[in-house]
Each structure stands twice: as C-alpha cells, then as structure tokens.
Length: 149
Image (cartoon, rainbow, N blue to C red; front, top):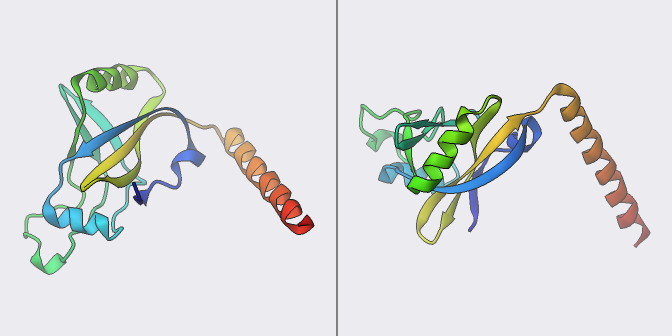
C-alpha cells in the first residue's frame, strides 16, 4: 500500500478523530496521473449529499494534457465509494458543529486507488504551537540519542 499523495498539512492543522478508507471514481488518465504522484489534495474536503459522498477542491491534472478532453476540469467533484453504513455515519458526523471531513492520502491497494479520509476538528493557534514544540523536542532527543551511539 504505497502512499502516492499525502495531505501533509492535515495533522498540523487538524486533530484527527476518526479515519475511513474509500474508493474513488476516476478517469483513466487521472489514475495514471495519480500513480505518477501528480495531484494536490491539501485544499480538498468531503461532503455528503443525499446517499453519495463527494471529494471537492482537489486538483488532479491529466496524465498527458494534450490527450485530455477539452471539457476536462482538473478540480471536478469526484464521487467516493463507501458502504451505506459508512455514509450514514459520515453524514451524522458532518452535521455536528466544528467537525470537517478531509482527505488524508491517496494510495494503492492491489490495482485500485483508495482515498484515506478523516473526520477532523480544527486546531487553535496555541495547539499548533504546542505541536511545533513537541516536534522540536523530539528532534533534539533523537539527535542526542544518535550522538551517543
């Protein structure tokens, strides 16, 4: 399950509460592009409309722009494939105030492309500062341990 595209800002900007895996409907040239690690999911978010779940604001460029259809929109809404039980759970969580659903990563599972999604709560500024401090202290500890051996 190699990760092809990651949302690097997700853990810094949000507190992850729950994770899900979903399939995604893509065109063939989008699949090739993702397999070459082209695309951006950092601005993306997920919404539930009726009995369907959509991935919005993600940019997946075509594999070969010259061969893509003229009507192709790289930031189009893409449908996610989940079970009815997961969709109803996501709809309930999305309705709660202060919770958002975002994509965390795109990866392969067998010959399929999957999207890792998470229900998150936004961090405040002081929480982000705390995350930076933890990261810095861990880096210092790792340097000391590496220097001793």
